[in-house]
Image (cartoon, rainbow, N blue to C red):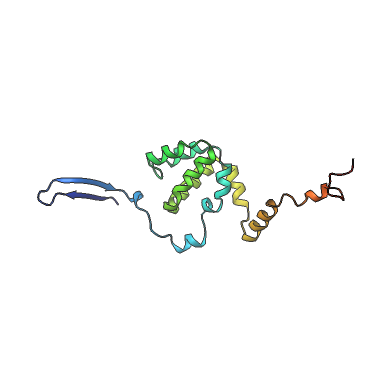
Length: 156
């Protein structure tokens, strides 16, 4: 479905402005209840995808047209690092519907099939994530076993 918009001069029929709104240009204001209850793979694994995707330009090539317009494509490609490019891509996602995220997911399955398989196998329970964060945020724990009884390094 395409919608044609135009503004005409009241005193004449001269068209002052005209635009075509394509279906893919229209964004939903709110996500459906099922989307809220079950976050998309792309949303669940945001941090890992930003850090671990190494072939961002190939993903952008697949998204150009169906998801990204020329300006978005060029702005993301201008990122200095792959992580910067992925962050720029994620900046656009609040306006995406599930179909756009599905398109990115399919592109990831082609370009990074092992990463997608690994992340799909990960159980993402809140307790597991909290425990994982708690362990990784306390690097000083476990270091006590390397210290001697008086707090110095082990015996010489």
